[in-house]
Length: 210
Image (cartoon, rainbow, N blue to C red; front, side, top):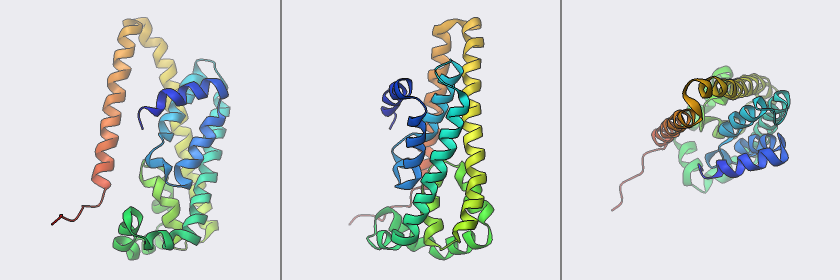
């Protein structure tokens, strides 16, 4: 996944915020959030916007629009095909068979937690729309709470990326370009390591092999 970032950066510079829209859409529509760094793409696009490549408002609209459409696609797919996919086993099937009753109660009684807050958490937001559809949460309620989560996620991600662009100018004036690159590289390594640990802890335990 990390190796995709240079290619995404090149596409962002060449094509613009449409790449943000596409990545944010496929992240939750078809589980590609497990492979495609959507959040990193938004941060990078906002950083480039601060550097003058395109308007930051366009990045915000692209991120929010793609995320909202992707979540709705994931909801529809989960509603109409999720149980068939889960019946085949594998990752979604194991999660569904283990937590079906709890998820149904959670989405019915606490949609603000199960939808809005879940939209802000990496890995969890990839599965959330499918699970919401599979538990038959009414689409209007899903859309209401999901819109709030998408707005928070897009605003925070774009804001952080834009501030990083401004901080870059300050850092380069204090420690120089080389020092700034080393600091940013260390931060990225730390973030990626934390992201991997979080994903590993979210994986269900594998049964021992005979």
